[in-house]
Image 1: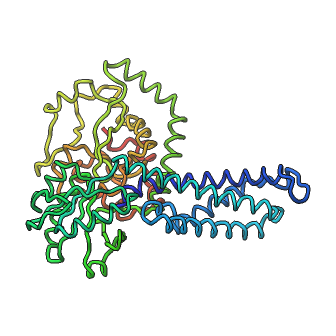
Image 2: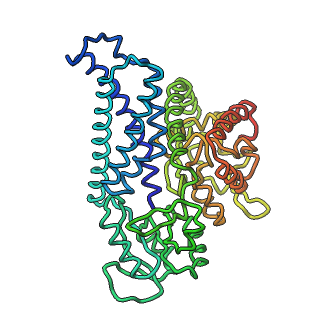
Length: 466
């Protein structure tokens, strides 16, 4: 349940923690120089080398990833969250003190005290501010809507726990059950068989299964169907389920919850991936600005219509977004789709054909060199996509997906990916899913770098793109 909120907040809070820490280190040097306390000092004795600033980033990053005080902001009580933060800062400061003793002993104890006090105060205030914003957000009806599949007692208990913990950002809107229990504060919205339709009709964000162990087969079937909708799926497990759980168990008021649709990335993997995406996409957009302007001019000169082509795609967890590309077709291409619709021998829809008459001359060159994909760097910078990942799928293609294929949405979609560097457009769209699942199951940051390197080679050789 907390995966989506953690994905949105954890990485940004950690980045701000690092920025606040570096600012505190800089201010501590200024205070030691300007406050008339202790012995006379010169600027040279208090100004720290850049290497120490880098060491601080590494130390705080490692400790905060291990202790995750940023995640405690919305998964723990206020006392627990503050305690986790104080432990993380204290451990980081102790590690930094040891490093100073071994490498740069000219730093005065008073200067280190300034830094420690500023860091503790600054991070505490920052985390309290984030906690307050989360609370105000939830009070302003920005709550995620949850549907319980189970009995009335489970629904009522979950509602009570979430009401006592508003920072979780969740509200129970109702439950589905085949039994007609006595009326409670949570409304019964229908039978279990109507769950899928209710998720769409009631705009549900989270589904929580609270069924007995003998209903596991039914849970599995419904979960596969729900994968086709942008909804998180969770289960209140039995004792046996907890013994064999292969995913993280969240405790909400003593109620354990197992996510059946958890992201394939750990918190640390997601943070490193997002940081790399932001830095790389921003740098590439700046460096390639002249090329982007020339391509835009060529598109405008050849045919009427907009420079960019915006298309709805499905991203992580099936969320919809507008993907940006350079327009490579004539402006009436959408109306001419029937002209080029093709299916393979198995009756499955082919996404691309090589002799598509709707593609312009400039567009054909852009596709061959993959330059039409460059505006997607904007999607990457905005967090809708990643540099590497499964291709963001079109809704009409996913309409023909088998349930198992929806597993490809467990990571952010990418501009390039494993299937692009192992066949590109030579492989029909429906065969990409197996490559995407291979990428998800074997994910690492080094695999991303390997795919990026192979992408440059494949694009240079011009294999398989049309």
